[in-house]
Image 1 (cartoon, helix red, strand yellow):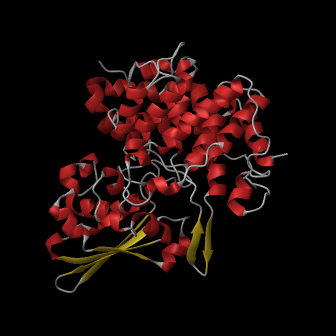
Image 2 (spheres, helix red, strand yellow):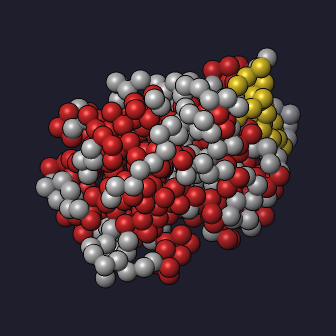
Image 3 (cartoon, one colour):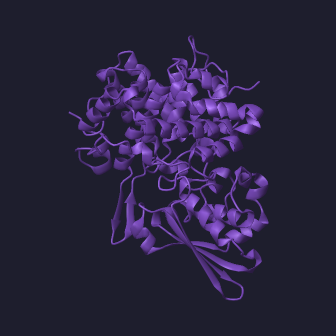
Length: 455
């Protein structure tokens, strides 16, 4: 028996919405509100435009599309929603990925079925627990003598697809066999390459997980209508473990029990999670700093952060927002110049700014062995600046705002919600936020999503 498949299935089937603790419900309510805001601010992103152009009209009730009355298939609604959620790279972060991408599919399905708000929130919580455990297993980092020598090239869409299937199965009350099949199908067809986020990033980086959620919705539909799936997708012959490690064996998932979702975080700034700490370091460094006197800025950090956001040539010459918001030198330069990073940092004018480019050329990123030894438990950067007169300054930033050790509260999330949603909804943004925050008490979650439609 595939123990990993059985663990996930049993967890998704056994948890009832009423069983989910109040603090978990409140935490995922914040995730939902934050995710809605990210989607509403990206209603015209490339993925959304593509989805609108190719969507097929369904015969029955369509899936819910955030901010739209469009009637499209459930899988297309999942793709459309997730494209919007993901586009700004402003949504959550957890265990090396962005599980709120899953909400694109859960909202599509929950809205189509008019599920209670608490059932949607419970589905989110279940999906996060599954995502976390799959991510821990497939994103394995090995260190030999302090050096990062290997990490898997499977992207987060693998965990997104499996978490999505488990969350939908939970929300719709699938039986054991249906749930097992949905998860199995999602796993069997869910191995996306991390090439989508290497080099000069393309539009596909923003829709890679959208493709995963679409595939997971289809897997659930197949399972719901009686299709059977592979019996051992994780631990059996030609399963995940054999592909990754060369020999079939146990997945060794972290046991379900505690609610790991409570350790998930949100993003304070519109940039990849790796770069959040760089922005905070830049804000500390710029206090009383004359930028004209700066000759060199050195960012000391972990190997992973340098590898992902400060090692490729493209990160020093970004031409697209997809590359710029993953570039540590870019967001640090913008934060030093502007006192923060907003969506305005990714306009064509800003991307080509001679002032930004000149400051980026003074920035270098190096590995700090002490910081490396404490990663990933503590996220940090030690930033030093050398001035024209030969003097230096140094700051040390740890645990950026939004991480679980330094979480964003309801007031923080409301500020971000207003920043992203008010340009779309205007004066009714306050009431929409309040309704979203109270969704646990709604007998039909669509009452909240209906308020997001404009025109």
